[in-house]
Image (cartoon, rainbow, N blue to C red; front, side, top):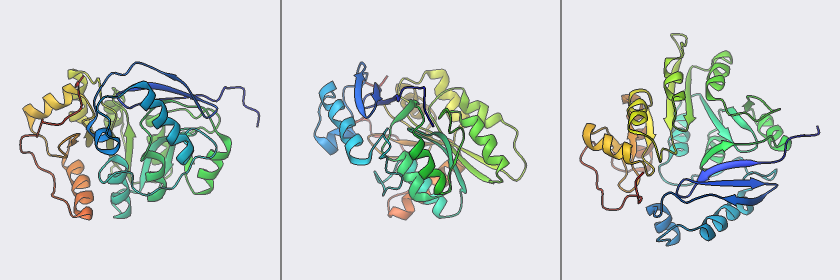
Length: 286
């Protein structure tokens, strides 16, 4: 199949920086909006994010696991101890989730059952803003039993993904999204009585106060990232959470159940709603 669309993938990562990858090369790095991330401080000793480090980090991802290329690795081990993909992986393995509606560079929205693929697709990629189809990658995922929403366009449409998952007969469906009113649309979508929908929200930096309230009203799991609105909301409302530097919040009892399942698997202390340790968060919170 001959593609008329240029190979182009846009992600936001490392301080909510907009990064464009074309034909396996980093072609543009936008403004860095968060200077300090405790995760990258711990892993790489970086005190302040800069464009040189960001370029090298993204190039490492391209070289290491083929991000945004036909060489993309689709099955991986855990990237961190407790992240969205790791929580999903554990709960799929436990049988509490039977389908994950996610997003993959070069593929778009897709349905996944295999815990190793769920981890591989989501574990080491940040916020995916747009992507174009990589035919060979799409075929490999389809051969592994994944269902791609639109192989022709690689569109990102979690609501259409939810509808497709229901059509395919899944009953306990988890959906990963970036913040927006799509979270309320997903929660309000009418589903059969025997279908459960669980919403996992990541990449929340720059979330507004109003949107923070929408997320906590509708999502099950919400990552803090560098969102001032989410930290402030959590300080006031005291949801259950895990993590000191970049907490993961529970919006519902189901979210807490899923997060605790991962923590129990690791032998870590379970979620708490004690006051957060604010001594080593991302900076600035925005």
